[in-house]
Length: 325
Image (cartoon, rainbow, N blue to C red; front, side, top):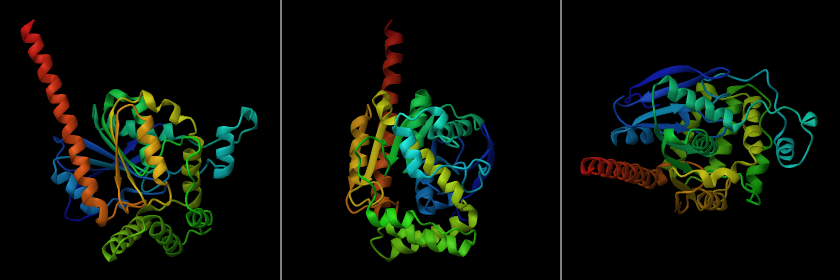
């Protein structure tokens, strides 16, 4: 992360391990929890993105999900392959025949809730990207009174009949290197991230490359860690049925050039949520980059400010009513 932006690092106990968190900004500012995607870490957030949020008056909390970064690894819990996990979640297979899924998206949501508890945060805004958006949805289902707003970027409901990733993406992601050599892992992640990000110019390419390099040395998960997270994603097959009960104000942001989760995923998610607005960003793929960051930030800040205005107006109305009676 940016050396110019100070932060406090914490390691917070969750149900089965430790979750790493960085806290940026003034502790008195409204908190915003950032949750990243599959195999991604705190270091995968762009420093300029964090800096802009802090400058806008947010206390930014960024976490490493379990199995990545500086958070605990679930190394003693082997995961089934994604195809097997997908089949088990959707077909009426007897429970005793099913291999165990090490953990669920709901468990990862409980980790994030444990972070809020430890930091004594009653409620906050949640921003989730890709898998992080799925975790945010589960948080809103588990503790709706603690979620002020949802910002769900390039993510999915996991609903039925949604399109698969592009063939090139599926092919590359299906063959990760079977090594712990950091140089080989970084080279592979550079290829994956460049493919799904579809950078538009040199600034995008440089920004993404630098983040991948930092994140790999910081705490890239071994193959099994990514496999466990992916099993959690594909086995979360019934969340879409519950999304209509989420009344939290939600902003769904999706690119129209996303090769990992095509735009239909964002449209479906916004349609299923009880109180959502969809923003489609032209030419954005599956990454926050300099070429789309300004548009995303502007919409996020508008989203936060609109919610705060609604809350202020509601509070004023309650006070007026109490005086009148």
